[in-house]
Length: 345
Image (cartoon, rainbow, N blue to C red; front, top):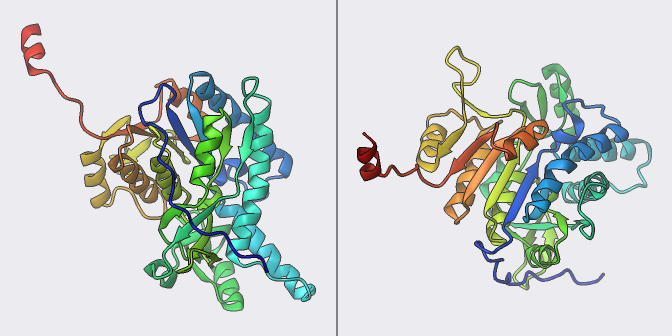
């Protein structure tokens, strides 16, 4: 067998304050399914085409753009399909989770590239990059599966499947029960140098699919796939920092972040600074199964020097980029010029 590639020291990131800012847009895997677990391929292409206009607007505004994507539903579908096929055709190899992530990167990358291709300016093409993400083999997440993948089931359905297949299962933010798999923290995006080189040519890069194919590095630098799915928002924040991006955009199921969600005191917020976001995260405002990982990714990106994070729904992305909706998280509260304020009074 050929030797696996070695992990190289990354090149210097693109200048964070260059004349062409870099934006990383993280799209959830559910964005292509529009909430339906039986979305047809044509419906997924339609969803990708709806994302094309705001991406093209970013490019026309002069930004370098990387599109990352989730694969939570899709990677579960692929794994389930492999398991079912193995029951009737045992001669076919079972797909481990790293192979399922790679499979999802190919299919979702194709869908996004086709959806974007007709909307981008002349000379700009979408390029999908197969992406590996290095994780720590000793990460405690391997012993504590928390990442929901695949179909939503009733509790009874999930428990039957768990007994049959040895799954870990859990409730997914009140939307049903799903299979849970390990989700270790990303340490390095192996292809970040290649992504930076493609950005420098003006192409739109699709990368980091499903958080990247999870791999661990051997002492000689070679890579080995592991049974896990990395959180795509965490990988997006890591990649954005490595590329020197100014902005990270994370799409989710709501247009704006809500505090006291689902209670009579629920209220939406347009803007948070880092201290506010940290306080609300510590207070339990952003649960693990929903907004929590996105807020942590935002804080990681800003701690690394990023300027701002925009969180909004895919359908509202254009309006959010225009400042009419969405929630922005910024590094520090706005400063008040007390002298100017006093002069006005």
